[in-house]
Image (cartoon, rainbow, N blue to C red; front, side, top):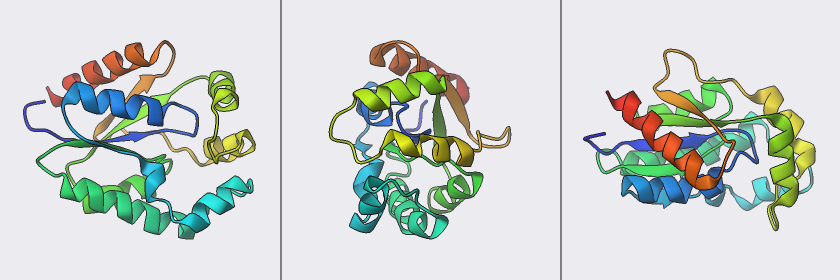
Length: 169
């Protein structure tokens, strides 16, 4: 990757976006922005109560992430966002046309186990089914790659960097 790109780290809750994001940003030499930090308090409260967000809830959040990604165009950066639906990714690309998506994927049982082990996060495991129901994997025409989340955070990060390099070829 000769010109630094903005990488949107996507996937359902529990795939490790918050863990892998900073590691990936460090490996790429760019800043990291935590997508959860862009949620308005009402979204956090809704998810904490076990209620999935709807599209109207997500739009201001997606716009804020897109604005951050736009501000990093040509400079590079990594930002996390579930970006579960094609329409959400299209909205992010509308703000940051050069962004690429790195989809963290994995076995549902592994993801659920990781969600149960994490402490202090607002997203309950009860919402995992709604996340998988909403998920639309990257299309062949979308700039991005999928990376399996099995293994250690370092192994996942190494696979992610390699996949992004191949994407840049």
